[in-house]
Image 1 (cartoon, rainbow, N blue to C red):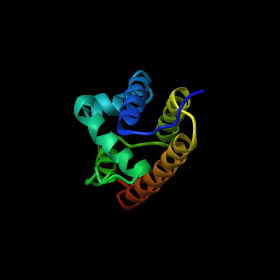
Image 2: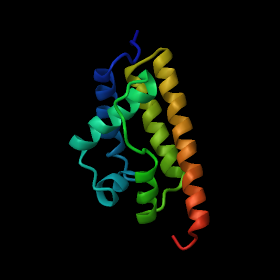
Image 3: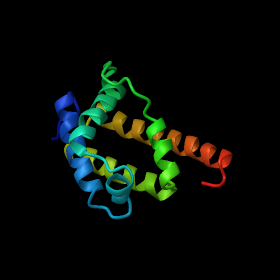
Image 4: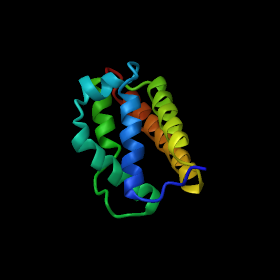
Length: 131
């Protein structure tokens, strides 16, 4: 039996594997490598801080999670398949590594976050149709 997500160390394990898988998927990896030019060594602690806040109510994340995605959308439009792919890899990685209440909540929160991002991006695109 797998154990549940319990700590920041578990989040580092989860997101290290998640981004490794995500960056192998050509349908979405270009957003990270070519558009955002993400440095994973810098990004991983930030995303762990965010999820530490989301799952464990830690006060580790102090930034705006949505604005960078809105900015990226102006460089390269996000489409529904990007969110579907992100969620697929997220859920698959959680299921491969963990099981339990927090793992279930993580997948539910990821779906909510993806939905909110899609709504915000759709609003931005509607207000700025030339993008």
